[in-house]
Length: 378
Image (cartoon, rainbow, N blue to C red; front, side, top):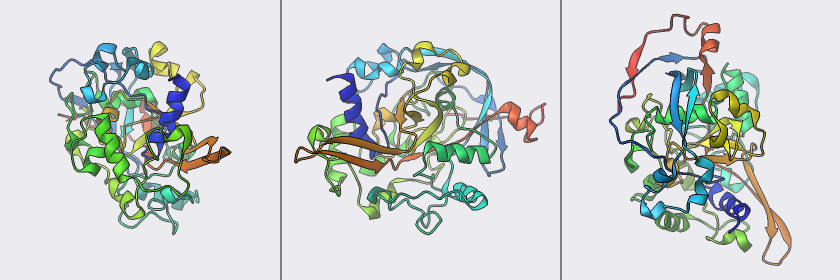
């Protein structure tokens, strides 16, 4: 199977569940006990609590040896994971990152103050998440906002005086400096994040088990997808009255927080990052300044989602999505005629980041820094 075919196939099969290009890998990790990290929190004008991620080096990406330690049921051919190799030491300056994903309530304030269009898409998949009356669905105030494009997330961040985190910043905030596999440590636990295991109500210890679960959950698409795109069956979609239940309120998994105390870095929704997706990033990245030089087609997204299995919840898993948050493919239908199939990706949200210098400039912190405390003791 050629690389182009593999990527195109994964784009279709996984996107409805929230992932578009599935290129996850596992890192080589030393199983050491993590220590409390000295950091502090601030609160910004949009109501977010942000956590300081201290300056310094960390290990990003995966090694071949680390990938081979994955559970047998998820272990792939190494060529599927080249985008996440080699495991590389990267140096970052200090920055702040939101403790939680941006919620519907926060995004509503942005919409109300600016007149920005609320999240809405006419596709059937989007119905449970649409802001049909100009506001978010009932009871979903503290859920992460979805149906937002990269441009939407960027606009919110700019309004809030912040920015989107780079993919490198996101990974450090998720895994710390000990190279851990998951935000909470090195052993998988389905109780520590909102993943497909929660939706399924049982462990999914192999890709085959996850695939079977997804196929049972699917319902018939308005226009079923056939041809080469349907190798694994129709794309998974959920009945309207069930989809919204798969999201969870932000911060629902305190035991799954990262070593810095950042929540939901695995599961719930995937998150937009600032940079374009560079498939060779790990081959040349050494510090945060190099990531902005690449121009591509897709934006980087991180963090797994409620539809994805344990393999995609790892801190090193890399993914990408069209900036529109909308996927389109063109292929032959059952009659042999070319047809375009399009749908929104319903499980991507975002969180924001901020430079320390910007927090000082806006008077959020003094140059001597605010009160320091221990956080993220896992």
